Image (cartoon, rainbow over all chains, first blue to last red; front, side, top):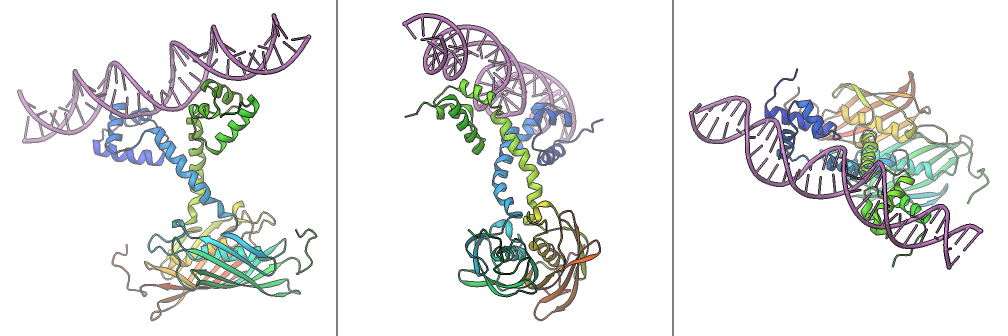
Length: 198
Length: 198
DNA sequence: TCTATTTTTAGCACTTGGTACTAATACCAG
DNA sequence: CTGGTATTAGTACCAAGTGCTAAAAATAGA
């Protein structure tokens, strides 16, 4: 049995229903709420909810943007613009809205860490490089719109222990915002790489 | 001037065009290729390309799934299952394929860092909490399928400097995989929170 | 060149999920 | 009982198609 709801209640429910499933047609909604299709259409108008196809299109467009945003999860964070294996590397990372706390607009620390860590991994000229230890300092807050330039410099390599120490520094407008020391583990020592070094 | 293309050429181009912009109508395509709408429709049939609305719907559906996957970028990494503000917190993070190096299947360090850092931020009972410094050790490699359980314990608070030190430990099957010390900055000291503590 | 086949175009009826508008009811309150 | 809100019904129309038939144009084969 359908409990007769007031207009307000119905419209509230309509909003929620469409919010959680934008793919629902007016007819389905009409059946669901036990009213006519016209009533649903009036409701949509009053609430300025676009029609099904527009809603679907919006989702499609919105997420076509997201596709780009969600990519970097498994990839290197930031774009590497210069690299000399086992020597140094530089990457750029543009801080966007999705990287900052809504509260204060300051970038979440782990994004800066991720850029630095990615770069430390990349600079190692080895098949396998793992972070063993990291000491990092967040010197200055970074905000959306900032372009973070990160430099990694390979400091020393302990051939016996298969360890390499890397210093990483991140700047925004030439001002230091982040620095870190990364101790990396590598399978092979320096110089004994695989043959193809193109 | 439009160069007359063979059927094959046109169909190849059609595939590419729709691939890169699924929002194009048959009419637009017809104009673009200098053929009739009917020809475009025959082509679509032969290549079994669905109509515009279906294509848009597909994009929307595909990306509605992604939305869930891409959400955690700006949110807390891992699911907080227990929290006592300014005391301790526990979160769970299931390592998936997208978190590991393809090469060796080992989780990228910055995901473990992100979970730990998120938890350190969350455990602070303050409007604003920023990471100032972090010393972390990646004790043992973590692999896809592993469930990482991370505990954060608030160690001490320096009220004058608005700093709080937090110890974080992550385990997989009760074995330590990651540990870290986080020094956090907070705006307000302990105890002087906003009124509503429900 | 003429025919046969493929390719392209045209036209019509029908579909979905609507908009825009008008008109008729139903309901509820003062 | 009357007025206003809410709901329903019905019509014409639209975009972007499908499905089908049929004709015209282009191309290839001998």
